[in-house]
Image 1 (cartoon, rainbow, N blue to C red):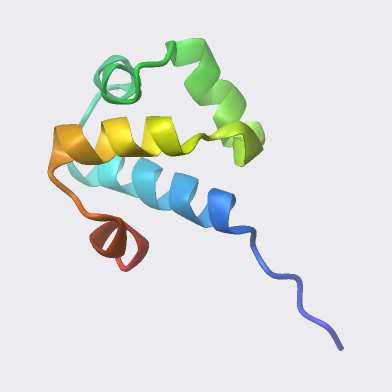
Image 2 (image 1 turned 30 degrees about the vertical axis):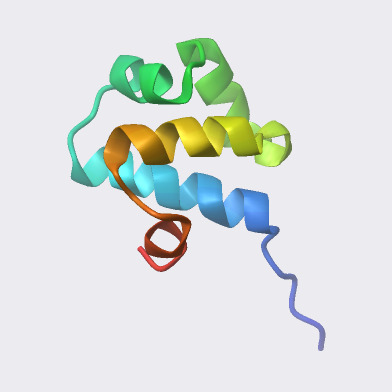
Length: 73
């Protein structure tokens, strides 16, 4: 039986949302870290394939997380 793997962009998005929850950050604050609208955040919850490296970099610079820290969060 073959297991379905979760795409990397989805894993990263879920880790970012986990960080948001653990740090009690509002959707507005989280959106500001990514330089996005709150509506786009909700769209990413359904399909995070459009999450760009630029958005990821914005988030990491605002939170002082490295990519390694985020992936292993």
